[in-house]
Amino acid sequence: MNIRASTSSDVASIVALFTASVHQIAARSYTPAQLAAWAPESPNLGQWCSRLAILETLVAVLDGEIAGFISFAGNGHIEFLFTSPAFSRKGVASRLYEIAAQTLRARGVRSLSTEASIEARPFFESKGFNIVEEQVVERNGVQLKRFAMTRVCGDKDAQP
Ligand SMILES: CC(C)(COP(=O)(O)OP(=O)(O)OC[C@H]1O[C@@H](n2cnc3c(N)ncnc32)[C@H](O)[C@@H]1OP(=O)(O)O)[C@@H](O)C(=O)NCCC(=O)NCCS
Image 1 (cartoon, helix red, strand yellow):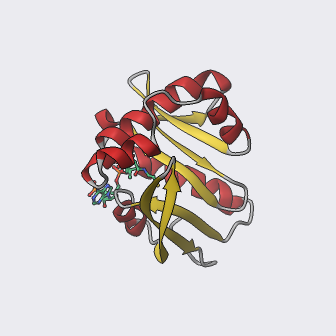
Image 2 (tube, helix red, strand yellow):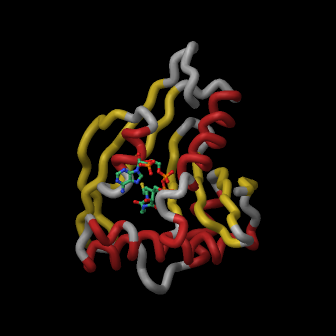
Protein backbone atom coordinates (compact mmCIF):
# COMPACT_ATOMS: atom_id res chain seq x y z
CA MET A 1 0.00 0.00 0.00
CA ASN A 2 1.41 3.39 -1.02
CA ILE A 3 0.41 6.45 1.03
CA ARG A 4 0.92 9.84 -0.62
CA ALA A 5 -0.33 13.40 -0.44
CA SER A 6 -3.37 14.00 -2.63
CA THR A 7 -3.24 16.28 -5.65
CA SER A 8 -5.99 18.28 -7.33
CA SER A 9 -6.35 15.52 -9.92
CA ASP A 10 -7.45 13.10 -7.14
CA VAL A 11 -10.55 15.13 -6.15
CA ALA A 12 -13.01 13.33 -8.45
CA SER A 13 -11.78 9.90 -7.26
CA ILE A 14 -11.90 11.00 -3.61
CA VAL A 15 -15.49 12.22 -3.95
CA ALA A 16 -16.54 9.03 -5.78
CA LEU A 17 -14.93 6.94 -3.02
CA PHE A 18 -16.67 9.02 -0.32
CA THR A 19 -20.05 8.54 -2.02
CA ALA A 20 -19.59 4.77 -2.46
CA SER A 21 -18.29 4.36 1.08
CA VAL A 22 -21.24 6.19 2.63
CA HIS A 23 -23.84 4.38 0.51
CA GLN A 24 -22.35 0.92 0.93
CA ILE A 25 -20.49 0.80 4.27
CA ALA A 26 -22.46 3.35 6.31
CA ALA A 27 -25.72 1.93 4.94
CA ARG A 28 -25.63 -0.53 7.82
CA SER A 29 -26.22 2.27 10.32
CA TYR A 30 -28.25 4.99 8.53
CA THR A 31 -31.52 5.14 6.60
CA PRO A 32 -31.61 5.70 2.80
CA ALA A 33 -32.81 9.29 3.40
CA GLN A 34 -29.89 9.95 5.75
CA LEU A 35 -27.38 8.45 3.27
CA ALA A 36 -28.77 10.59 0.42
CA ALA A 37 -28.52 13.74 2.56
CA TRP A 38 -24.98 12.90 3.73
CA ALA A 39 -23.61 11.91 0.32
CA PRO A 40 -25.79 13.18 -2.56
CA GLU A 41 -25.50 11.04 -5.71
CA SER A 42 -24.57 14.21 -7.67
CA PRO A 43 -21.90 15.78 -5.49
CA ASN A 44 -20.83 19.40 -5.85
CA LEU A 45 -17.16 19.11 -6.89
CA GLY A 46 -16.55 22.85 -6.50
CA GLN A 47 -17.70 22.67 -2.87
CA TRP A 48 -15.45 19.65 -2.29
CA CYS A 49 -12.42 21.49 -3.73
CA SER A 50 -13.05 24.36 -1.30
CA ARG A 51 -13.44 21.99 1.67
CA LEU A 52 -10.29 20.03 0.81
CA ALA A 53 -8.25 23.18 0.09
CA ILE A 54 -8.04 24.05 3.79
CA LEU A 55 -7.13 20.49 4.86
CA GLU A 56 -4.23 18.10 4.31
CA THR A 57 -5.29 14.94 2.53
CA LEU A 58 -3.44 11.65 2.20
CA VAL A 59 -4.57 8.89 -0.14
CA ALA A 60 -3.84 5.16 0.10
CA VAL A 61 -3.14 3.58 -3.29
CA LEU A 62 -3.58 -0.17 -3.68
CA ASP A 63 -3.40 -2.03 -6.99
CA GLY A 64 -3.22 1.36 -8.76
CA GLU A 65 -6.52 2.48 -7.23
CA ILE A 66 -7.32 4.94 -4.43
CA ALA A 67 -8.43 2.64 -1.60
CA GLY A 68 -8.99 5.29 1.08
CA PHE A 69 -8.30 8.85 2.15
CA ILE A 70 -7.86 10.90 5.30
CA SER A 71 -8.18 14.69 5.57
CA PHE A 72 -7.06 16.57 8.64
CA ALA A 73 -6.47 20.09 9.93
CA GLY A 74 -3.26 21.36 11.51
CA ASN A 75 -4.90 21.43 14.95
CA GLY A 76 -5.32 17.63 14.97
CA HIS A 77 -8.93 17.48 13.80
CA ILE A 78 -9.64 14.55 11.46
CA GLU A 79 -12.31 15.77 9.06
CA PHE A 80 -12.61 12.76 6.73
CA LEU A 81 -11.53 9.12 6.92
CA PHE A 82 -13.06 6.85 4.32
CA THR A 83 -12.18 3.47 2.86
CA SER A 84 -13.47 2.15 -0.44
CA PRO A 85 -16.00 -0.68 0.09
CA ALA A 86 -13.76 -2.95 -2.03
CA PHE A 87 -10.91 -2.53 0.47
CA SER A 88 -12.87 -2.56 3.74
CA ARG A 89 -11.26 -4.19 6.84
CA LYS A 90 -7.87 -4.58 5.19
CA GLY A 91 -6.07 -2.03 7.36
CA VAL A 92 -6.36 0.88 4.89
CA ALA A 93 -7.86 3.36 7.39
CA SER A 94 -5.42 2.22 10.08
CA ARG A 95 -2.43 2.95 7.86
CA LEU A 96 -3.80 6.36 6.83
CA TYR A 97 -4.56 7.21 10.45
CA GLU A 98 -1.08 6.13 11.62
CA ILE A 99 0.70 8.35 9.06
CA ALA A 100 -1.58 11.34 9.74
CA ALA A 101 -1.20 10.95 13.52
CA GLN A 102 2.59 10.61 13.26
CA THR A 103 2.74 13.71 11.05
CA LEU A 104 0.66 15.75 13.50
CA ARG A 105 2.55 14.46 16.52
CA ALA A 106 5.89 15.37 14.91
CA ARG A 107 4.56 18.93 14.64
CA GLY A 108 3.75 19.03 18.35
CA VAL A 109 0.02 18.29 18.20
CA ARG A 110 -0.91 16.48 21.41
CA SER A 111 -4.62 15.87 20.95
CA LEU A 112 -6.59 14.42 18.04
CA SER A 113 -10.30 14.87 17.48
CA THR A 114 -13.00 13.82 15.06
CA GLU A 115 -16.74 13.54 14.58
CA ALA A 116 -17.26 9.84 13.97
CA SER A 117 -20.24 8.26 12.29
CA ILE A 118 -21.98 5.31 13.96
CA GLU A 119 -20.05 3.09 11.56
CA ALA A 120 -16.66 4.70 12.27
CA ARG A 121 -17.02 4.79 16.06
CA PRO A 122 -15.55 1.28 16.65
CA PHE A 123 -12.60 2.14 14.40
CA PHE A 124 -11.73 5.24 16.43
CA GLU A 125 -12.33 3.38 19.71
CA SER A 126 -9.82 0.78 18.53
CA LYS A 127 -7.29 3.65 18.16
CA GLY A 128 -7.85 4.88 21.73
CA PHE A 129 -10.37 7.67 21.06
CA ASN A 130 -13.04 8.39 23.68
CA ILE A 131 -16.51 9.79 23.13
CA VAL A 132 -16.89 13.40 24.28
CA GLU A 133 -20.55 13.66 23.33
CA GLU A 134 -23.23 12.20 21.10
CA GLN A 135 -24.37 14.77 18.52
CA VAL A 136 -27.22 15.14 16.05
CA VAL A 137 -26.35 17.22 12.99
CA GLU A 138 -28.49 18.33 10.09
CA ARG A 139 -27.42 17.64 6.50
CA ASN A 140 -29.68 18.86 3.70
CA GLY A 141 -32.64 18.93 6.06
CA VAL A 142 -32.09 15.42 7.49
CA GLN A 143 -30.79 14.62 10.98
CA LEU A 144 -27.78 12.34 11.47
CA LYS A 145 -26.29 10.90 14.65
CA ARG A 146 -22.54 11.10 15.19
CA PHE A 147 -20.00 11.13 18.02
CA ALA A 148 -17.50 13.83 18.93
CA MET A 149 -14.38 11.88 19.94
CA THR A 150 -10.86 12.76 21.12
CA ARG A 151 -7.60 11.08 21.84
CA VAL A 152 -4.94 12.71 23.98
CA CYS A 153 -1.39 11.60 23.21
CA GLY A 154 0.87 11.30 26.24
CA ASP A 155 4.60 12.05 26.04
CA LYS A 156 5.47 8.40 26.55
CA ASP A 157 2.75 7.24 24.20
CA ALA A 158 4.07 4.51 21.93
CA GLN A 159 1.05 4.69 19.65
CA PRO A 160 0.47 7.64 17.31
C1 LIG B 1 -14.63 3.46 9.39
C2 LIG B 1 -13.75 3.08 8.19
C3 LIG B 1 -12.96 4.32 7.74
C4 LIG B 1 -12.78 1.97 8.61
O1 LIG B 1 -11.94 1.65 7.48
P1 LIG B 1 -11.17 0.25 7.28
O2 LIG B 1 -10.10 0.48 6.28
O3 LIG B 1 -12.15 -0.82 7.01
O4 LIG B 1 -10.56 0.05 8.74
P2 LIG B 1 -9.37 -0.95 9.18
O5 LIG B 1 -9.35 -2.15 8.30
O6 LIG B 1 -8.10 -0.18 9.30
O7 LIG B 1 -9.89 -1.36 10.65
C5 LIG B 1 -9.06 -1.32 11.80
C6 LIG B 1 -9.83 -1.76 13.02
O8 LIG B 1 -10.90 -0.84 13.32
C7 LIG B 1 -12.02 -1.59 13.87
N1 LIG B 1 -13.15 -1.50 12.94
C8 LIG B 1 -13.18 -0.95 11.70
N2 LIG B 1 -14.43 -1.02 11.18
C9 LIG B 1 -15.20 -1.62 12.11
C10 LIG B 1 -16.57 -1.99 12.18
N3 LIG B 1 -17.43 -1.75 11.18
N4 LIG B 1 -17.03 -2.62 13.29
C11 LIG B 1 -16.20 -2.90 14.33
N5 LIG B 1 -14.88 -2.58 14.32
C12 LIG B 1 -14.39 -1.94 13.24
C13 LIG B 1 -11.53 -3.03 14.01
O9 LIG B 1 -10.92 -3.15 15.28
C14 LIG B 1 -10.49 -3.11 12.89
O10 LIG B 1 -9.54 -4.14 13.08
P3 LIG B 1 -9.85 -5.65 12.54
O11 LIG B 1 -10.33 -5.56 11.12
O12 LIG B 1 -8.53 -6.33 12.69
O13 LIG B 1 -10.92 -6.18 13.46
C15 LIG B 1 -14.62 2.54 7.02
O14 LIG B 1 -15.43 1.48 7.50
C16 LIG B 1 -15.51 3.56 6.35
O15 LIG B 1 -15.10 4.23 5.41
N6 LIG B 1 -16.80 3.62 6.82
C17 LIG B 1 -17.87 4.33 6.15
C18 LIG B 1 -17.75 5.77 6.17
C19 LIG B 1 -17.55 6.38 7.52
O16 LIG B 1 -18.39 6.26 8.38
N7 LIG B 1 -16.40 7.06 7.60
C20 LIG B 1 -16.01 7.80 8.73
C21 LIG B 1 -16.73 9.09 8.83
S1 LIG B 1 -16.37 9.80 10.37
